[in-house]
Amino acid sequence: MSEDYSVPDQVRGFVKSLTKLLRSRRISDLAQLYDQEWHKTTDRLFKSTAWPTVDQIAGLVDNDELTKMVYKELYYRHLHAKMQPTMEERFESFGNYLALFDALLGFNATQPEIELPNSWTWDMLDDFVSQFQSYHLIRNRPLSSGLTSEELKMLIDYEHMWSVQTVEQYLSAFVSKLNGESDNNDEAESKEVQASTFYQALGHYALVSLVRFNTLMGDYYGALQVMDRKDLVHKRSMFTKVFSCHLTLYYSMGFCYFMLRRYLDALKTVSTLLLYVSRAKHAIPRHSGQSVLLQRLERVWALLSLASAFAPQTYDDLQNDAAAKFGADRLARVQKLDTEALKEIFALAAPLFISPATPNYQDETANPNIFEQQLSVFLREVSQRLPISDCVAYLKLCTNISTTKLAHLLNVNEPQLVSNLLLVKHKTRNLRWRGGPPSRGEYMSLGEVEFSLAKDNVAVTQYSSARRYGDFFIRNILKFQEMIEDLTARPQREQQ
Image (tube, rainbow, N blue to C red):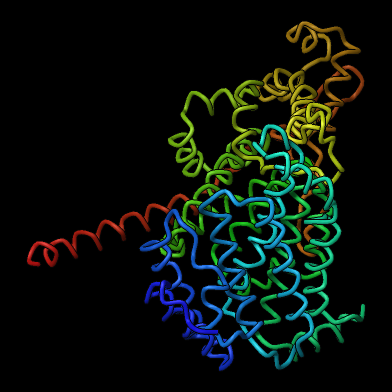
């Protein structure tokens, strides 16, 4: 096939380099091509238009099928990010993903025919889940999504496209490629050592994608159980190599903890991520995909604001930053468990949930609103906590108080007071992760007040509000370092 000379020179150079580097397995050069040339060319030439089709560049790759599949993965990913793809393009992207994944799964794990850099590997799997999510959001609201009658017919006729089972099976297959088929941990570890670096990254990033996949469908415990299959918490070097992966993992894990009422674990998870971001701002890539990362980071800040309202531990500096983002008045209402404020912040913190069920294509109002279902679960928990807030406030002021006096202060009868006190015990006793698999933990009393009830007397034995001063000093030291570096560099800039 002859070359298409309508293809811009920058694209021709990119495609020829891609073909050469894929086959030679020069990972560092391929990483530079992807991280720099791909994004630079996109920003310069294709901000709002599609890259050349695979037919246009086929002559540049000598019709090599594997290279064409890799290029099509980039082509469709850009199409979904910058434009509104047609239903046919969504189906073609799905078919290309399956063909590419089948090829990767068919390679020898120790010596694959091609290898991709970490950033490309993660972006490929992450966008696989994103396109799955986008497809199901449209599928659940076909009429309001502006689909044509032909596209609606395609949705109905091709039920198997972007199916939940297929997406999960392929992600799990990559994990199996990493772990091997044996349940023996020693054997699995030995197989991981033998696997190439590419397949180690592919397996770990597929695990993180599975965590996100389960979170989107509201299976929070299932998402944490996915992490039990591999100790991602301690194998930091792999997922921290790509900032987007790091962000996605900690956000998904934090949201799962939050919805499972493990508020301190949620708060610790998101605060750890935000403190890392404050110390390593350079880790956030600055290219056309940055807007997606910043949107996810906003969700993390919103999640921090929610978790802070339910967990006794405080991160004053982070909470001040959150107040600057969302408004101090709004966050003050969140701390008081104001329903409307909680709804607003929950909408900012929650992912775009999807339903795996087959929708009603003729009457989309009959389809379940997954966000409203998750919101109702959250608000039911809030309503159960409202009666205990006044009770806790009075207990903070006491060391000993009779049930008669406390009932009088709360304007309730004594049986209702005992019920409220038991509710305080129940709501402040949560699982907390103390090491090991992330889905497990130890039941601990995590309330601001520790008390005991003996006959007609309430004895308050402990009141604690943990404050973390170390993080405050670290963040301010970093701010001063930035100021010093800026002042040092200013004379040089003025001379230039």
